[in-house]
Image (tube, rainbow, N blue to C red; front, side):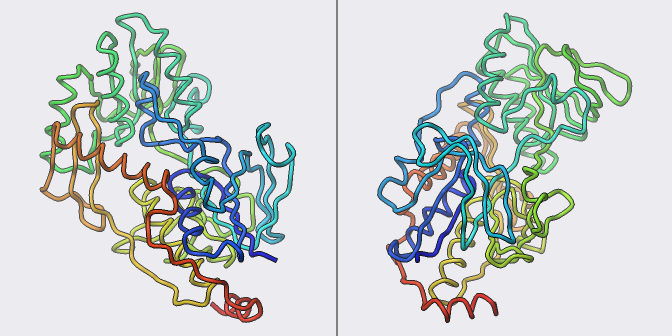
Length: 402
């Protein structure tokens, strides 16, 4: 029988992992199944553009993997049993290959279900706030923004890169709206002084009002309430203050952190279940300097490369590669014609090297386009080096002792 590999989630991490495994392993020996709720690959780093009214390129997953040997399933993952090695699926679309409810078995699992908006602990977020953490959420926000008349008010909560990009995109696309950004601390504190100065100038040009040191404690239909007792009015509130992983992993016997992320080693392998790998936002892994890798597209692909190469090596009896994942840059788009490219250390600390303006925007676009290209061409990212699996008994003994 073929070795069954199931990859859950087709964001950057999951999609790249599936393609790299297909390139590393001989299809006569393995069956790779990629499960994703959306039938298309979604460029999450562009969802603020989608929400602002722009159209994104359609990339159906079945087309991307048509000649790779990867089997694509469009279904929701409802549960994982890491001891029985099964995954429960539901809601597969009519074009799918299975029933609406099904249990899928695996020999090796790659968990890449990603994250969603983290605001459930703040009253009113679920009822009144929008977010850009998923395609459906972005489309709902897009429809709501389209309803606003000139002079309408939009408040983005969160001073991180997602909030900055969203505020800038909305202000550029709809200069007739009043856009504001509220942050608990400072805005873009992780960037260098030069980068922050450029950001302030860009926000002034776009007309974005910035509220720093504001702790939002409640979201209401027409604005937010702060811990100081103040109030910021808004017809539309967009919540970007952090992300949280899906609760599926925490409901299993997998070892997870206090935030529900699967704890993995340097090869992205679960510490508690050696037949499970986790990549992307769902994994808690150490990077350069022993610091946990943050949830970001910048770490999704390197984690995917690490996991795919390690899993393929273990299955085929080759040496398992291990590298330390570090950072190179932080990229911020400020609309379509402005941006910031911040050079960072491998530990993700800002340096004095910054590229801003149109040049920064062009490089950011090249990086985003390159990430999408790597997913759109899943077996072209490395030379063809498909290896046959090691003999079953030897492989099982090796897996039990590594």
